[in-house]
Length: 288
View 1 (cartoon, rainbow, N blue to C red):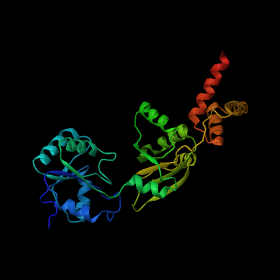
View 2 (view 1 turned 120 degrees about the vertical axis):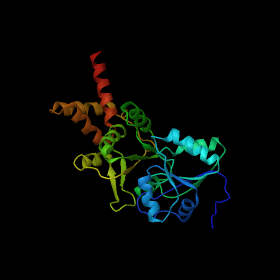
View 3 (view 1 turned 90 degrees about the vertical axis):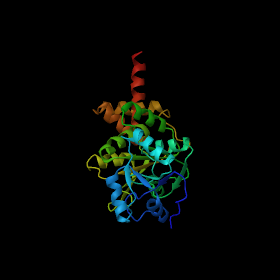
View 4 (view 1 turned 30 degrees about the vertical axis):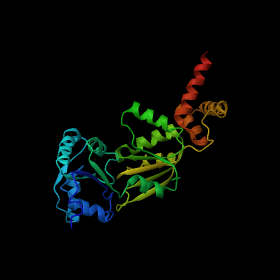
């Protein structure tokens, strides 16, 4: 029986597995069979899922490189009565993919938008992290541009909620280093390949993960869960003079400034970047 045959044109947001193909709901399978058309982020990837469940609904591509033109085409189809299901490569469409734009078009056109809940890498990683789950903020992928990334990281320095990030393997080490520099040696859980054969959870400190991935090549997709700034936690303004003296003392033993700052930052679990800035400012004051 087709449960949606009498629906007017509409948009279904269907969550799909993030790894294990068994992680899909009965409702999601029914909707994917009964809609008129499925829009997928990567049709080659999605065909594997549909073939596994013997689903033969027509498939079309909708991704960041064609979202403007294709979005208009899909909107016209829905306005003409097409029942469309939107899926991403993994998880809930609209999260870190172009799905939001299509949802916005449908909402503005007065079309019905129906969520079909399911797997989510961010929430799966959060609940197994061992870090606080009562309040959290999802940042997705950090910006690639240095200036934009710096602005986001500076905004997270005083964030008290648990922070959730996504990262690709080729950018992981750089991101871990940036997080360490801006946030200090925070508690972190790194969840790799969620629900897949090589699923792995690493719990520890940002500093230890920077060291580990400095010698181990990252493989797979990663979700990072970072502890927020604790209530009452203070920055490097606390005993700043003492911190500066420790840096200068280490320099006196022959260490270069960068190494000295890193050592003191690790000792007091402080953002290295903030400590470096304080050292530079102190030296500038001495000049005057």
